[in-house]
Length: 428
Ligand code: PMP
Image 1 (cartoon, helix red, strand yellow):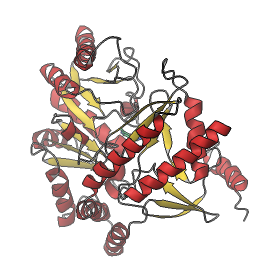
Image 2 (cartoon, helix red, strand yellow; image 1 turned 180 degrees about the vertical axis):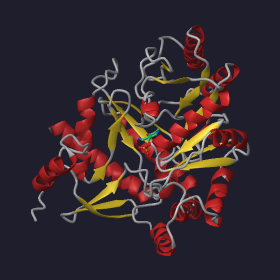
Image 3 (tube, helix red, strand yellow; image 1 turned 45 degrees about the horizontal axis):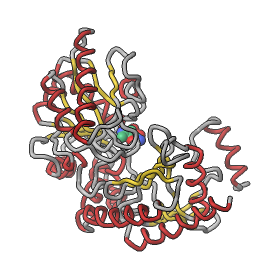
Image 4 (cartoon, helix red, strand yellow; image 1 turned 135 degrees about the vertical axis):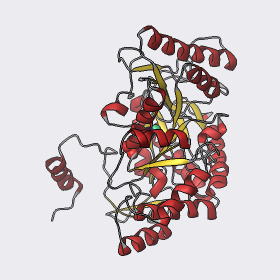
């Protein structure tokens, strides 16, 4: 069979529909992974700085053994008694604030957010949700209504500008002034719901606004916004699908924001590839959600999921990956900031743990986003042997988010490839 990229592309369009998303101008045909490395069909290896799902490394032997071992025994679902599923649920909630004590398992981040939104509506009796204008929390009809929502225009969703300093909401404000301006956004959204007779159910945000572009934090915003939401009868839901599982150097990004959410959702890295999601919350909230309906999700929370999930937690803990994410992320951030000084296209370099964002701009003064430039850099890095992505409100932010088994030597190698790719830009 013809396995050239052209032949595979043609078959793909036929089999899956033209327009199925695909990375890179020259798509990758991957055949193997190991730790932070991916190998293509031509035997070339790439340093993976994009994938956060294989959080404990591609083809992690401990996770593979755990899930294969359980799959060889029995792979049923969550409607039987099973101590391992309970062990996993307990381990998971024990990693959270003590107020968070129960969990609803799902298969995806979208479903976890779906459960969270339904739970908030059931518990509060409200309907309205506050989110940000550049958010992505999933693709179902309900959760998808938060995707890049207009400020007003949807009856149940009011979007606010996400907190940031790089393209500030208003000029001339210091950090405290910006926090006040963003809190006014929350107040206005709540007031508009009130005026329309729509009771508030809650606010759903990623605590580090990852899809928005990983802005520099505005300390104090989230706890104060949570207070406004709770005073208006709503709940704070934090979406830790990207930010959780030690990505920021702590188990949960909310721990760095000085806030305790009512509900926390997780997904992507939980099973190192096994589709897993969770909606964790205070036990009274979960109990009311369970009482209101018989939520069941066929594939979620099976013994195999629990086995994989436990192996991921063991790996993260035994290998000290939270501390490593903090240390290697900080080193890489500084190294990239140093390089950026002499690169006019780089407007800003910011990060939290092993999650780094680089603003690609036409001009440092106007800060006009340069999406095409970012895409070109992503492709040049791919050619050089490093896989990253681009994201953010304007699609111009380079997104560096490797598996957490990333070591200092990998950071150094990436810096060398980054410099190489920049040199190619200069001579292009
Ligand atoms: N929340 C966030 C913050 C996400 O980035 C994503 C996926 N990119 C989701 C939720 C949805 O997760 P899933 O694709 O597993 O449904």
